[in-house]
Image 1: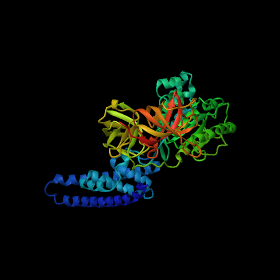
Image 2: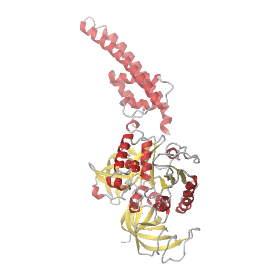
Image 3: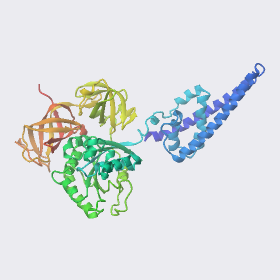
Image 4: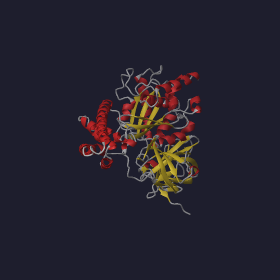
Length: 573
C-alpha cells in the first residue's frame, strides 16, 4: 500500500515543521518580553497587561500540552480511530497510532506546536498547511482502507437466509441488542418467535407477516480487513427476477441450505430454488460460493456429520455441472443461523468441523482484482426521487468522483454527479465494487429505467437489439425453435427477447461446431443463436466485459437457459 510507505516521510517533515514552529514561538515570546520593557515609562497600565497576557498564555499552553498528552495516552491505549475530532487532530492521530507508537512524546510536543499557531501566529498556520499531511482520508472514515465485498445470500425459501443475515449483523454490532429484543417481542406477539432475526433485513410489513423476503434486502458489516455489503435475496420462486438483480451486484455468493429432514430435499428437487439459485449466481458472475448448511441445531439433525455429508454429496455434482470448481470455488461449512453457532466463533457442538467459522473465513478470502483505470460502467438497479434524481447500482469498473460528467446510456443523456454515497456514507470518489447511491443533475427520474448504464463520455458502452450468443439450454420440456420468445436478464436489465435463428450446435466436450444449421435445440444442448430484443439495450461482448456479457433466459417462471454474448450485430435499416 502506498500510504503506509509514505507515512514515515510525512512524519519527519511534520516534525521539522513543528520544530520550526516551536522555534518561531520561542522567538516570538522573547521578542514580546523585550518589547514590553521599553514601553514601561509611557503607560503604567500597559506594563501589566502584556505580562499577564503572556503569563496566562504560557500557562494555557502548558495546560493544553498536559491535556493533549493525556488524550494521546488514552488514544494509544484504546487505539480507536478518531473520525470526527479536531480538524488538526485528525491529520495527526491516524498516523500517530499506525506508525509512531514508540515515541509517545513527539505527538504531545507536536500538538503544542499545533495549538500554538491557532492562538498566536496565523502565518505559521499557512506554512503548516503546505506540508503533505493527508487531509482527505479522515473526512471519509474507513473508505480507502478496506476492500469492498458484496455478498449475496441465496437458497430455497425458508432455508434461513435472512435469519443468518440478521445474526451476522448482530454479531458484528450493526444491530444493537435493544432493537433485536423489540423484534423478538413483536415476533412473539405474532407467535413467530423464531423469525425475529430476519426482521433486521426484512423491513416492510408484508415481508414480516408472511416471513418471506420479496425485495433484495441490503445491509452492511465490517470485519478487520474488509467492508461487506449483505444482499439478502428472496428465495421464493415468484421473486426470482429480484434475486437475479441482487446476484448481479455480488462478488461472492452464500448458498444457504437447510439440513432439516425434508427441507433440504424439497429445496433440491426439480422445482426447488437451491438448484436454480446456484445456477443464476454462476451466470451473474459470482466466482466463489460458500455453502452454509444451516439449521444444524434442529432436533432432526443435531449436528450430525452423516447428514452434513449427505447434503454435500448431493450438491457437489450439481454445482460442478453449473460450472463451479469443487476444489477451488466452493467451501462447505455447517452453522446455525438462529443460535449463531459457527458464524463468528467455533462451536463445541460441532467438533468434526475444523475450518474457520463463517465471518473469519470471509475475512481471509483472497483479494479481488478490480481495474480502476477501465471505462466507467455502472448498471442501474433502482432509481427514485429525493431532492433530485437518485440512482442505485454497483460500480463494475472505472472510478467516479463528485461533479463528474457522465453519460446515461442508451439514451445518451449527459448527467452530472451531485453527490456520492457508498453504503450510506458520503464520499468524494468511488472505486469498482462499491455499492453506490448517486444523486444526478440533468435527468428526470422518469427518464431512467433499471438496466440503463452510466458511462464516461470518452468510452460509451455498446447498445443494440440484435446479437449472437452461445446458449446452454438447462431446463425445457419441449424443443426450442427459431421464433421462440423468452425474457432476457442481462446485468440489471430485463427485456423481452426472441430467438430469430439458431446458427449451429456446439459439442459440449470438444467445443466443435456443427456444419449444418439445426432446426431446433432441446434440453442440455449448447447452441449459438441470434437473438433480437424488443427494445434497445446496453450490452458488451463477454470477451470484452464479462459482467455485461452474460445473461439468463427465463420463461413461465423457470430459468430455461444461460448464455454469453459473442458478438453484437449492427442494425440494418
